Amino acid sequence: MSRRQGTAAYIRRARTFCALLLFALLVNAARVQVVRAHAYDGNPANRRTAIARYSIPRGDILVGGVPVTGSRDTGEQLRYERTYPQGPLYAPVTGFASQQYGTAFLEHAEDGLLSGTDPLLSPFPLWNDVSRAQNPGGDVVTTLNREAQEAAYRSLDGRKGAVAAIEPETGRILALVSTPSYDPSELSGNSEAVTSAWARLNDDPEKPMLNRAVRQTYPPGSTFKVVTAAAALDAGVVTDLDAPTDSPDPYRLPGTRTRLTNEGDGCGDASLRAAFEWSCNTVFAKLGVDVGVADMTSTAQAFGFNDTRQRIPFATAPSTFDTHVDKAQLALSSIGQYNTRATPLQMAMVAAAVANGGLARPPYLVDRTVRRTGETVDTGGAGPVRQVMSPSTAVRMKELMVDVVREGTGANAAIRGATVGGKTGTAQHGIGNAGVPYAWFVSWAQADTDMEPKVAVAVVVEDAAAERSDISGGGDAAPIAKAVMRAVLGL
Image (cartoon, rainbow, N blue to C red):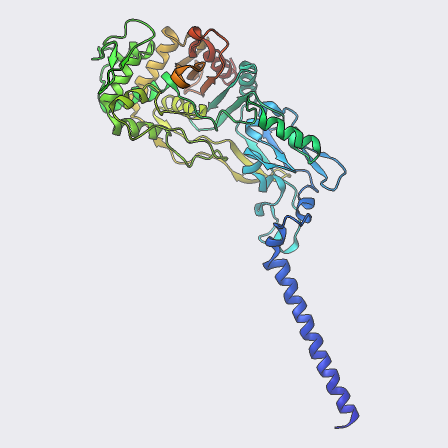
């Protein structure tokens, strides 16, 4: 072999080796950027993702077309922090978006869209995966009614409690308030002040970060009698609203020596109309037993009790009706005691189903999501409709609830120019029922100029400002519901 031929052979080998090295580099680059990209993105030591995430303003959450969130340019490495101009008012809806503690509620459920990482925001399919580009964050348009939200928050006036309001025909959530509340802006950054605020809020015995409207369950007390009355009518246990019932006063719980009594007189053998109007425990406890566990369970679950999958779009605490009870326990369950527990949102759903002719619409909080330029990305909306009770039963239940407001314990909810139906409740709780009773009120309202009810409301007040003997849903919770209903109806 000549020297020239030997040199050519060395060059070919070197060229082949360089080509192999280049190919190996390309394969490794593809592995790093495509196959391993998500693993590296999720590595706590990698700050590039966090820097990119906070390098642009976050999309906004809108109420009535107006943002209730914002972004502040800090000029730091994690450039933009979340702001909440009316933080405590909307905290149960927005939650928080913190550089240190993550996200909650709508900020969490819609994080991909708000942060700009949702693939639906990309101009082309898979474009972001290839280009690693950062889209502007989209906006979340809520179903909230600003006036109703403000009326609920103002009327609670710092008392511990919650309000949930729904549009019966659609399931749109019109108000969601929990007090005491907090300012999510305190948690937005990553400074020592944020760490201090997190510790203070979590250690606060009043639990301001607890969303009482959807994440706290309470014994619903007499407001649950709406469910029991609907079950009794649908099962045919009661056929005439005005006929006497076979209901002794006091009523001995089956299989026990415990005697159940009433707050007032006149409940012995009272008709369903009178018992509902004046909230007779003895009548409804016996009705629950007469209806039976199977039918009581079926009706409660049709209203939404025992549903562990509800999302609005964030998860809610399941309301419960115990399905494994003896007759004495069923009697207590049927008047909203024993193991029966409900969120305010669930009890608003109960009132909404009555107002909507027996049809239950799943509640939802997001009307639609949009790009920063305004184009719709996705629409919200209700899920499948449930037939909770027959239409004829719903008509009679509306009649009973109207009587409560016109002539009974819910008179404080009456609105001039509207038909209002309601049910009061005072729920005992604590060891030996020693706790301050919870004051409940559930209702719906229809303006005289409207064809259908426009709002259903549930209110619970944990620390009613009255002597224990004077605490009542009609006195403490009904005026709050009235304020919310008036705001929605524009009266």
